[in-house]
Length: 129
Image (tube, rainbow, N blue to C red):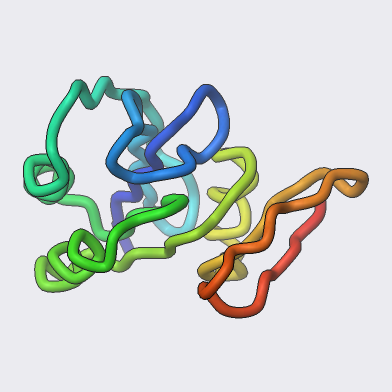
């Protein structure tokens, strides 16, 4: 099975918010393994343009930090599965995704780090490596 995942970035970490990321990691997955991974520049765009751009990349899944409910609904209407409110290193999120263990609100923090709680976003999940 083939799929394409996008992760908005802030350095090597998941960007705190979908709208403000300047870079994204695009990952092609085949048979539950990374077939190709690359970083792309996103540039300055508004929320609607960002949603349209990600959809033009033909992604199936978006792993992100914060995202507005409007953007999340627009992506869902385009059959993009959104796993939101995830924090931590992008590589750790991808690893958990490939293991089918990544959940919305996941905090992929080192064992000695603390994740910020997400007010109003439900129970915080901490996944340590």
